[in-house]
Each structure stands twice: as C-alpha cells, then as structure tokens.
Amino acid sequence: MMNEAEKRALEFAAQQGASYRCSGGSDTPHARATASDLRKLFDVGLPEEGRDADTVIEDLVRAAEPGLVGNVRPDFFAWVMGGSHPAGVAADWLTSAWGQNSAIYQCSPAAATAEEVAAKWLLDLMRLPQQCSVGFTTGATMASFIALAAARSEVLAQSGWDVEADGLQSAPAIKIFISEEAHSSVWSALRFLGFGRSNYVVIGSDDQGRMLIDELSSRVKEHEAPKIIVCQAGHINSGAFDDFQEIAKLAAKHGAWMHVDGAFGLWANAVPHLAHLCMGVELADSWAVDGHKWLQVPYDSGFAIVKNTDAHRRAMDITASYLNESEGDGRNPTHFVPELSRRARGFAVWAVIQVLGRQGVCEIVSRHCACAARLSKILADEPGIKILNDVCLNQIAFTVSSDMPAEDSEAITNEFLSEIGSDHGPFLRSAKWKGHTIVRVSVISPDTTMQHIEELARRILSAYRSVAYCTVRRISKQGPPSVPMRGLRLPT
Ligand SMILES: Cc1ncc(COP(=O)(O)O)c(C=O)c1O
Image 1 (cartoon, rainbow, N blue to C red):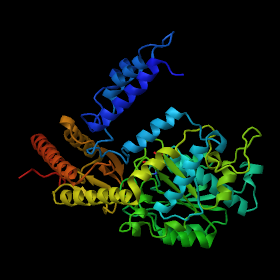
Image 2: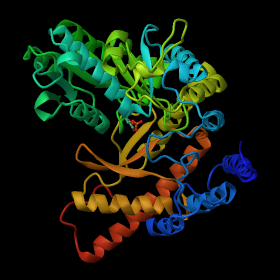
Image 3: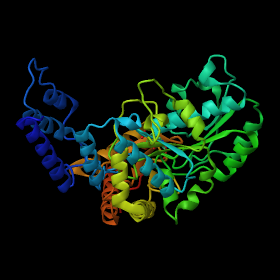
Image 4: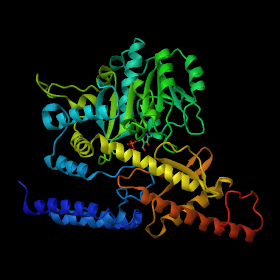
C-alpha cells in the first residue's frame, strides 16, 4: 500500500502537470537554465537513505522547470515534434499508475487489447491495408528498424536463405536502394541490422530531396541480389514525398521490398485533400510512423507497420516456456517489437485517437499545412529571404544568406536565430541542406494557429531586417565584400 507521502506525490504531480498545461507550458519556448545550472540543480548528491516521495517530486519540479523546452507551446517551430495531447498525458499517467507490462497478453490483457484496437484504427486513419501488423515502438527510428528486420528476413527467405536459422554471416548480400536524402535515423536502423556502406546503392535526389526515379530504375536493374528500397513520406526539411507509385512498380518488377519512412508525412494520407501527396504509398511492404509527432501522443510512440505479418513475426520472434500463451488469449504485443518488458503504449494512443477522432486528426494536419503555406507566402515577398522548398506540407526551409560564403552564412543565420528567439521569442533552428545554411520551420505544435503564424512572420521579418541592416553597415565600414551580398538588403 502507498504511504501518505507517496499519495501526496501523485496528487502534487497531477496538479503540477495540469497547471503547467493550463498555463500553456513554460513562459518561454526556450530552456532558461544552462547545462551547468541544471547540473547543480539535479546533482544534489546520492542519498544514503531514501527520502519522502512528495518532497522528492517537489524537488524534481524545481530542478526540471528551468530546463524544460516549450514544445507544447504554439510558438515552438524548431523540430518536427509533437505537443503531448493532454488526453494522452492522462492515459500515460494511468499507464504508469497501473504499472502494466505490455509484454505478452497474459501480463496485461487490457494493454494488449488497447494496442490491438488502436492498431486497427491507425491503419484505418492512415488508409493502409487492414491486414498489416503493427508494432508499438519508441518512435520512427525503432519502427524502421523493425520493418527493415522483417524486410531482411523476407528478401533473404525469397533467395532461399533462412536468416533466423543461419544468421547473417554467410547470407547472400542484400542491396539497399536508398536516397542520399534519407533521414539519418534510417541509416542508423540499417546499421543496427548489420548493413554498411558497401550494401547501399545511394540514389540521387532532386531539389526537394525526392529520390530520382530514373536513377533508381537504372540502378535497380544492375543487381541480382535480394533488394530493399527505402523511400520517404515527408522529407525532414522540405516535407517532400517520393513518387511511391513509380517506386512500387519498380519494386514489384524487381522483387524488392519497399519500405516507407513516413515519420510525420504519412499522416497526410489521413487528410482527403492532402492524400494525393501519398499516392501509391499503400503499395509499399512496410511503413514507419510516429505517434508522438502529428498524432500528438506523448513520447515515446511510434508504429512499425508491416504487410507481411509472417515476416514481421519471424523477425521479432521471442519465445520461452514461461511466456505462456493459452487458447483464447488476445494479441501478443511482443510478437511485433524487439522488447519483452515494455511500457503499455497502446493506452495513450487509444485515448488520443478517441479524443481527436478522424476529423480532429485531419483538422490538425490541414491547419498546420495551411499555416506553413501562409508563412511561406509572406516570407517569399521579402527581398533577401529565399524559400528553398515547395511548401506542400508543414515544413518551410528558407535561407537569409543565399549568396554568402559558408562561414558568413552560418554566422548570419545564427545571429538571425538569436534575434528571433530574444525576449522569449519563437523557437526556430537551423540545418545544412543542399549547400545552404537553412532556417527550418516545422508547424506541428497542436495549438499553433494562423494568429501564431502572423506573429512568427512579423518576428522573422523584423529579425531579418535588423540583422541585414547591421551586417550591411558592418561590411560597408570594412570596405566592399569579396562576395556580392545580394542576399542582404537594407530595409527601406
Ligand atoms: C522523416 C523522419 N524519419 C525518422 C525520424 C526519427 O523518428 P524518431 O525520432 O521518432 O525515432 C524523424 C524524426 O524527426 C523524421 O523526421
């Protein structure tokens, strides 16, 4: 039984969590404390004797709050991250309070059934074939890992090799056809599965980061080996989608497994007026999707979706006599993921889908895409700001320094970002893409509306003009620049 201090700890946590979210999260999207401040706050010494739970939880709140980033706020645009829907948070609290282990069905029939039902709804929402199996994972990285493990098993099986029995050491070499612009997490997933650089056929990309179909078509013919083609729904900078219809034709013709990393972009398929972006995506063999991005399920939540359930189960198989299964048991969650003991991830997914409904999911995704389109239209009118992507989804990639040498470009971009973030301003971050230092805007926080976008545009233009003005003045004092600064214009 719980003691009084433990009960107070739970009540305090609920009240703190609710008031944090009622006030819209922290009062700034940025962490306020430095790494050394935070170390001091957290490193209070390893206690020899335990302490009361309520005072520990109070201390945790005090230590953590200065280092929290406001990704549940509507002015957070830095990375593609979701905002933990309050219904998902409540379900997650219960998940912890119930302490369920969603390993085998008998560990928690409720957890297993919540996953089973949520899996069916996910396939329905994203318009993927209903026969697919779904593993509930920590995120899209693990989802790709699982799906590609199934791919590895199946393409080898089709070449007469039983990887579950004979391992990888002497197996036929598999060729992975993958875009140079695949997300970094997919390369990691492949590495965990025993693939390395010499196993890849890296395919070039167009200016939006889409795989070049002609190149894929000619390269895929060159190899007799078992094949996996990895493609992408929603490029991390541009939001672009590969041409799934053409890739599926090539995969079918050459007996390749087609995997789609759709961490956030696959949600476009849930929205009737955006579904054209995903045309043909249902023809793939497997998909990796996040719940903790556009669906707004609290972290950790991702889905490994595989059409060939036998391959999925073979790749993830874990059996022991004590992992009892009886006739009449429901779905066994561990059949579809690499872990045995695991968090009951289905409860939060079930709750968020119930609260949002199909319409709610469509509304969030459509609103964010409309916001991104509006922002890019405003920014495109500013001389010196160059939008680098065709804004088809929620991502905007722009540069404030398109004609500058690399070091200057990076310095100016950093100056611009710190100007925007000053006085608790919106949170944006940079990246390198196609030879440019870019500013990335990801519209994905659940409460972001057009009003926040108008305010973001105002902040961006004002920061840009102030940085451009200072830079042009600095340069003119130092004499003419070696490279024409066409990208920077003095405000009129
Ligand atoms: C396109 C894409 N793929 C994969 C991932 C990795 O997802 P996760 O961080 O959930 O593992 C991300 C994360 O941002 C992503 O944007």
